[in-house]
Every structure is written in structure tokens, then in C-alpha cells.
Image (cartoon, rainbow, N blue to C red):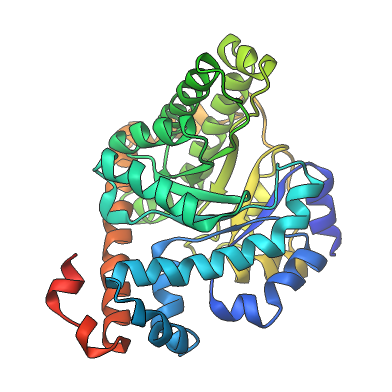
Length: 367
């Protein structure tokens, strides 16, 4: 393990891989990253799966074999995805056991087409959790306003949840309240409060907004400021009486995960965000290229300040220039939700021609 990766672990930050493919699991790459580079978790999303299934032929044999079940294209996809995520969870099981369930997680998203349907998201989360049959597999639920209802109900049902598509401290706090409500209901019902949850804040998605609209220095400044503000909210939440009461009852803190931290600016360091977002107790989920760059030449900056540092000064500067962070955060969430849905449709279309003819029909695609 490089000195940088070793220092990252010493400072209490977990490193998860934001990547999934059949090759990653079968050629030993994930096992290597876990054993040598200290990776202790894995996340996925529809765009990553669309790339994995849309390029190459690693899944072709399984698609043909599983198509005999007569499933819809979507059901067939989840069979394939669960194969991958179960394998990843098994690779991560030692980390899960050694950390007492803090690390060692794989993560699978519900269909992004359900982002605005709470009832169906709740049903899908329960079905995927049961089908996965792994204690260390998160079900990813989008942090939309409707999604928060599904987060609460899923936590109450004892399903580990990764709340995704969060872009601001307000989004983060909404997810944290949904988690707390689910745990409080479990306590009232006499159930264990130990249900794991992470909240995934998307950081670099702010970069293109700044680049397009405001020439206010390096475009990462606003994304980093939003992350600092969210970390302050996280620290304050853990110190709040409400959370302290839950912790005293045995609940575990909801962990804050830095997502979309690979960066979108070719002029910036390829490890900029992971170097800038070091904070104990948090998780950095990064793509394979960023992981390798970090191991090769990355250097860590100072830990994030618990008081948010200069976050409010930077955000106020952008507000004076005409950028309303609340409005933009809401738009980013909508845009990313739509982008995941687009990837989902592309994924279904990539898979459909590989199925036996009786499954390849407009009716099947639209189910």
C-alpha cells in the first residue's frame, strides 16, 4: 500500500471503489485493490452498468442462459447485477467482519425510473434486499423528496440503505432525518436500531455549472465549499440531542460518503477531490483511474474543518455573482436523476438484442 493510502486509513477515512464490471470481479482486480490498496467497499450505478454491459461481451453467455427464465429485460438485468454485487460483497466480507460492519459493503441501486414513486421504490428495495441475500449489500435509493419516504420505510424494515443523488447540506439533512425516523420507529416497535446507512454527496457535479456560468477562479471551489458545509452539518448532527439519544440506544451513525469525486476538470489534479476531502469517519468513493492515480502520486491535504472552514464565504461569493446554491442543487438532482434514467433506457436497449427472440419485443421493453 502506498504511503498516501496508508495515511488515509490512519486518519480514519474509508476508500470505496465507484466501479463495477464483470472483468473487475473475474480477473482479480477487485481482490487486488482490497488486499493491496486498502479498498473496503464498492458502489455502482446505472451509468456504470450501462458502460459495463454495453461494451464487450463479458455478460453475453449469462444473458443467453438467464433469458430462459422468460423474465423482462429489467428483471434479467437485476439477475446479472446481483451476480456481480454478490461476488463483490463476498470479496468484501472479511473487511465487513473486521470492521464490525462499518466497511465491507457493496451497493446496488433500484431502478432510476422509480425515483418519484415511493411505494414502488419501497417494494423494489425489499425485493432486491431479499434476492441479494447478503448482509453487506446496500440498496441505493435516490434522495429525492419522494425517495425520503422510501428511505424511512426501508430503514424501518431493516434494509441497509445508501441514499444517493444528494447535492447539498439540505439534501443531506433530509436524508439524515429520514434515517432517524426509521430508527426511532424501530425502537418504538422493539426492534434493533442497528441498521446501516450511508449518505452519498455528489461533489464534482458542481464543476460544470461553475465553468459554464461564472469565471470565479478554479471551478472546484464551489463543489468543495458545498462539501465543507455538508461536513459541518454532519458534525453538528452527530452532536445533536436527537442523535445522541439514538446512539445511546445502540444506533450507528449514518456515514457521509463523498461521491462523484473523480473530478470534471482536465486542468485540475486527477486526485483533487480525494486529497481535499479527507475527514475521519467519512468515505471516499472513487473510480478506478482515480484510485490508481492516488496510489501513484496522490498527496493528502489537511483534514476538513468541522466548522466548515471558508465554506460560507465561498458560497456567498457565488451568490453575489448570481448563483443560487439551493436552486442549482435542486436542478442538479433532477438532471442526475434524468441522466440515470437515460442510462437505464440505454442499458435495456443494449441487452434486448442479445435475448432470445421471444423476449425481444416492445411489450417486454416497456414492462
